[in-house]
Structure formats: structure tokens, C-alpha cells
Length: 89
Image (cartoon, rainbow, N blue to C red):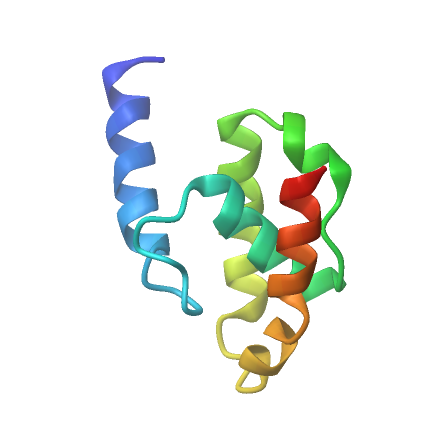
């Protein structure tokens, strides 16, 4: 990974931490899973093995889809149970 890619990744991470109630100390996997869940209603297994650049694409794409959706916060219901189940494997 080049220095430019690392810098861009760091800026995206800092920007995305404050969107849609993301955890400040949460990783990209958590953020991608939460946004994916808010749009699709489930957490897919492929996220476990997705490289960082794919997680960044998911975060960027789904953030754009949810950006002006005033009811997006309602889509979080059920995420924490799904996240716990996802972590257990």
C-alpha cells in the first residue's frame, strides 16, 4: 500500500467514524457491516474475508445511499443482535 493510499484510507476512516452513529473505536468491518445492514437488512458472510479496499467501497457507497435519508436511524434496529451473531461465527 502506498503512502497516498494510506493517507486516503486514514481520511476516509476519520470521516466515516462520525456518520450514522458509528463507533469511534470501531473498525472498518464494523462500520461496513452496520451500513450494509442499514441498507440490506442483513450482514453477509463475505464481509469476513473482504479486503480493506472492499470495506472502504462498501462504506463509501452505502454512506452515499443513506446520506439524506431521514429515517436511516430506524434501519439500525436489529443490527446489534445480528452483529453479535456475526462475531460468534
